[in-house]
Image (cartoon, rainbow, N blue to C red; front, side, top):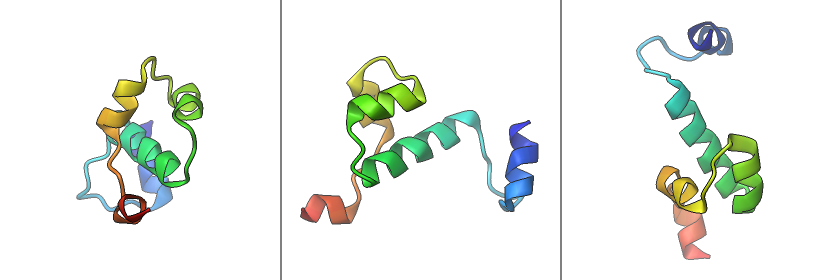
Length: 65
């Protein structure tokens, strides 16, 4: 199902897309949008905040703030 969704979305075939990579990208996007960790956890299904920080990378812009 994920492969079909990625194809429909126009992702390149050479990129490996998994449930894990999509979840990580979502956490990064939510963090970049300054969504609080508790809301991110509610969306992604994470149980502890530490797992959110393990997934997400702080952007250069956020580091400068």
